[in-house]
Image 1 (spheres, helix red, strand yellow):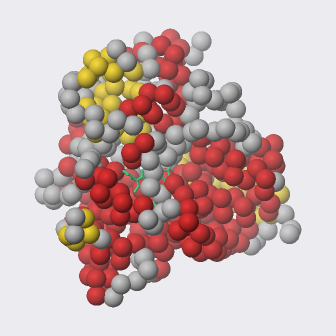
Image 2: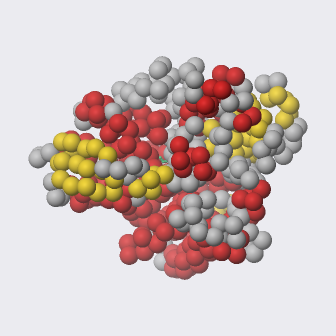
Length: 422
Ligand code: HEM
């Protein structure tokens, strides 16, 4: 019997960044919670929270946005100490909430600003550019015919940076800066990106945020004078109730697109490669273009880059017989929902032909990922060019995981490959 099967439920670790870094996703612990206590209160945690692990509950809770709020807390910190170091809550700097931290009525009004830009119809316009960008990175990696590379460095990281940089309208020479800011903002729990995590004065996440705001302020001013066909222009000119957005809200828009659009897609892409290396038969099946789309959905279900987002109870309530108090925090574990035996046949089988596949990698309900179409397009283009050209591919070392309980990050993925001649 494994450790997770014997441990008392209250001692299961589904929250510490160390555990995610060292062991990856705690699927065994989540499976036990789904079976034995799907709405489980970790009352002894330094910051107590409800762990929500079933697909049906995550869906039901996400669809009651006025009772289960996205603000003020986007994720569950494992310790009070980390809470104090959250760059989002720095006393020096009043940062307005980003879209994902907003609640109604503001959320609905602000969400409309981006909706028109990320519909499937509008995406047709960006299709060719994403295709070009993905093809270039794949060509660059396979140019030598064979070799050992870090897949994150060659494809998984630069692809979403280029797409987001291009969509926003950031000049190409500045794209590496977007990469650095994302790493420091999302990797605030990882000493590689935030060496002084215990000292709020030195918090790299916060410093990165200030740099990002300063940088985008200038681009916003430029776009106000000279509009272009890009997201910075969209945000700079957007109106709610006939009024332009306050300047800090415009910058918050830039922040959420940089923050939400990079690391997530990066880890979907690298996690996908890892899954395909571990399942070579599925990799070969996915070379067939007929299986590309279902394969991408399965990669999203399997890798599930966002580990959890939090909700806060707006008032005392009883959900499924459990009494929750106003201000209680809930952690919605999307990767657990995506292994839910009540929804998926053989949930622990990686199957690139899986259909239906009602995964929750992009969330569900009011805050469903605004960039889901963009992310799907990026993954599709990357694997469309990669798969037919990879004769052989294997791991050349262990994946190096991010220390985070928010994003299932792979910092480095060393692979060895041999390209097929086409
Ligand atoms: C594989 C890649 C991605 C994954 C797994 C992912 C995951 C998610 C999830 C789970 C949420 C829901 C949050 C909630 O319900 O509280 C979300 C929201 C969001 N995502 Fe993504 N995302 C990805 C890519 C992107 C991209 C490429 C963009 C931008 C171009 C983006 C922008 C956003 C925004 C703006 C929100 C907030 C939506 C709202 O609050 O209404 N995401 N994402």
